[in-house]
Amino acid sequence: MKDIATPNRTKEILETYGFSFKKSLGQNFLIDVNILKNIVYHAGLTKRTGVIEVGPGIGALTEQIAREAGQVVSFEIDGRLLPVLEDTLSPYPNVKIIHQDILEADLNAVMEQYFTDVDEVVVVANLPYYVTTPIILKFLMSKVPIERLVIMMQKEVADRITASPGTKAYGSLSIAIQYYMDAEVAMIVPKTVFMPQPNVESAVIRLSRKTEAPVEVIDEDFLFEVSRGSFVQRRKTILNNLQTSLPNGKEKKDTILEAFEKTGIDPGRRGETLTIEEFGRLANALYPDFHRPQK
Image 1 (tube, helix red, strand yellow):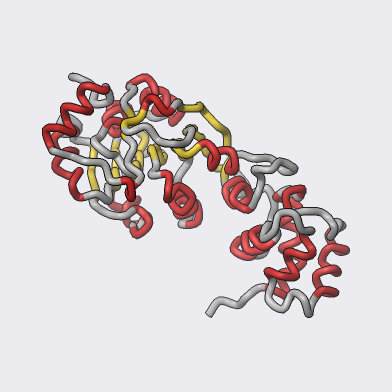
Image 2 (cartoon, one colour):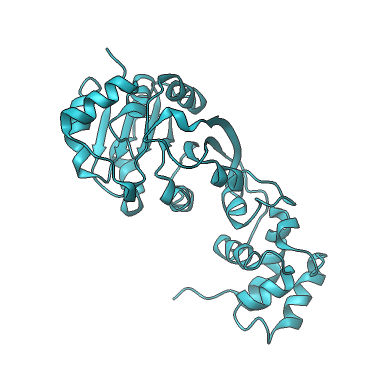
């Protein structure tokens, strides 16, 4: 069986269906089988693994996943690709294509319908770069039991996700993801293995679920609100940023300072220097005075 992900086979499929790329959907198809096999290797799939994929394109990565996994559910937003996928993935009865925006999907329903007979569920995807962050956060915030995510994305975003405190790339995105997952860059991917070639460098990251959170917080949403607010202006101190971002922060400067004193954190530091643990302690101290009650 010929692999989908070769330049000639990809061109042949595109010509057969008269397919043209939509820039608005961030469509860049992988045309290197070795890269795809490497992505699947990093995902650690077995026949007892269920996989969620986002943006299968013409099925190049899907095919490699289907050969290793037990069940694959792939979300494709572009209706023009449905007949292509029906053709290219016809040899793989363990693949289900859902024509839906993953951001609108009910992940709990998907888990119940397709993954009751697997030992674990993993996300493997070459994500559309323009919605990488919202998609990752949806998987994490939905609390569905996903063990790992192995995802191709823009290298700049991968650097932010995996960044350590004290680096320029470290920010609220690093904190939101590393609160739930251990994050590492698995491989750097050259532009030349895509059709069409993107204008940016790409990377594959591997996110593995932590056995326990790095810090115990009263309210996770409030932790992320505090961390986001601390990076409103990176060059300003965390005190200045929180005065701006927290409700009535300027009027409650003394209350914010009390939280810093209680946690032993210097209010003159910048957000990029604080660890997740420090943000957790600070959020817990600020919570009684600044959290917004759920409506």
